[in-house]
Amino acid sequence: MNLQAAQDAIQDAGVFFSRSDDATGRGRSQVLDRNWIVVSQTPSAGSPVGEAEAVLSAVKIGEPNPC
Image (cartoon, rainbow, N blue to C red; front, side, top):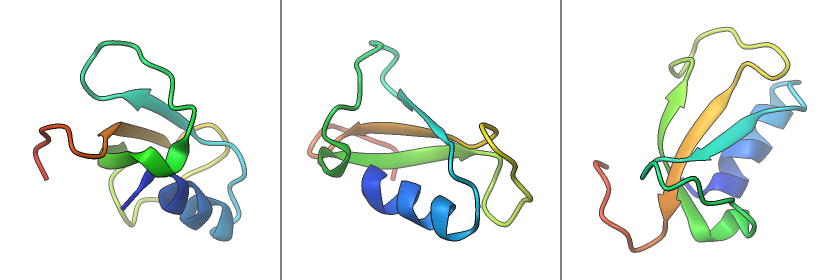
């Protein structure tokens, strides 16, 4: 799922603030969310989450990833 769609899903669940990071460890900012794909998340899917607790780790679309 691209980063924008994942953020939209979190907001649809009633949480309006989530965080994202560069899963490669290079510290890049995710400026265009639709150009990034989520490769992991904390907490895991189906777990309760509150404001600022969701962290989405993403890589740019087309980069190697574990998915």
